[in-house]
Figure (cartoon, rainbow over the protein chains, first blue to last red):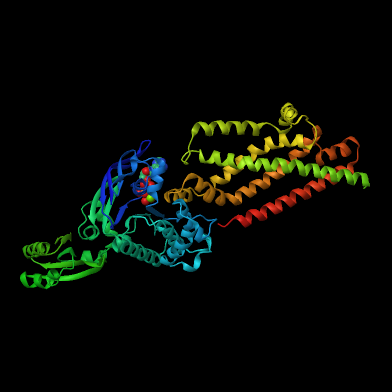
Length: 333
Length: 217
Ligand SMILES: Nc1ncnc2c1ncn2[C@@H]1O[C@H](COP(=O)(O)OP(=O)(O)OP(=O)(O)O)[C@@H](O)[C@H]1O
Ligand SMILES: [Mg+2]
């Protein structure tokens, strides 16, 4: 379990992390999103004390890292793996030695290393690459080496700083799959920074939204998409649900245009037909999309509701109550 | 070329080789730790230490700013004190060493700076100790640069050694001056210069090859 208590990090006049409180339970995949400069990396680096917080406490499995000596912190780091956007492998060392490095740091013997490294390589799918130099690997393969290195000492926590941002979509998907497997099979808590909402959508259980060094929202991943609380979270969600209507459609409309968010419950299935039968309105579907957040469907529908004004209002009220969310994009003029 | 001259030339070459062996060996043995020290005490590194950094930096700069000829003369008393004489190639090696150490240390420091900070940080995130990072990250990652720097150092010390010859250090430089300058045997001078050019080319060639082979990026 990870607990941050009033963590603040300032550089001279810049407050990179501003009084952050977070609790991340064991086994969770926790995402951190926010625009560039929001303080995400700084916060993540506070978790393994690569950055020493100016104030506050960082508790990993109940142990306060900020109270430890340098040597003790090093020992704790063995249990906190970290991977990076640009991999940061030792370019002069072969894949095998890059992974072995981690174990040398833990004081493991050569025999132990010889036994463990092939296991790790197998796990990340690089069994045949032990003798390659990093320069001979693709980005995805390099990240796999990074993951193997981070997992070498059986950590309880894995920190990922934009681990997939330098990779193409297919490779990203395969790395995410690997992270998910690791999370499930080893029970490792994963904290990951990303600016790609697809990453959140695919693997995060919960998400923190950061702005100006502050965590302004913490939400279940599904809830973040279904019902974002802050304007910033809304903006991020919008990038995935980018349902923009052609100007022409908006101009030609005669009714109200509304965006309805469905949680994919069976109760919502018949909502449109029920609305039509209950009120004197017609409902045209203009646009729609279903996305899956952690395998739970979330539907977005943009509809035009036509009829007389009061009927439209009653229909909208009805849908609002019955569904998760309804946002009127354009009223009847 | 007379047999006598050929003989002199052989001796001069051996003297130069001797001066270089001593000074380059010491420059490496002391320059590398010094360069690492400069790097790991710099800002943001694990043994960050402003005072140590400033003191050693200043000393290095002072030595490096003294022209080698002057350094030679200034060090004469010290050479006499340590070795009992200020003449001969071994004596000249001392001033070459004094010039070579800070020269190479700076080059070592520079090649360490070229290492991606992220790699060092990743090593720290693994829980590695400073010593492990020095052995397994800093040295291997800068190997190519260390070799390139060594090449530059050897060539510089080779040309310094010719100057050392002027004050009785012996070696190829001494030969060129004794025969070429004092005895007006221009062909000896030309021969020495041609030989030095060849030698420098050879050192550079080997150095480039080795540096390239060490670079796995
Ligand atoms: N070592 C440092 N010295 C001074 N300021 C820093 C340092 N590291 C970060 N900052 C500042 O702290 C703020 C947060 O930086 P941080 O790298 O944590 O942002 P981020 O959210 O990770 O951004 P990005 O998405 O671009 O990686 C920025 O304003 C940055 O300039
Ligand atoms: Mg960042």
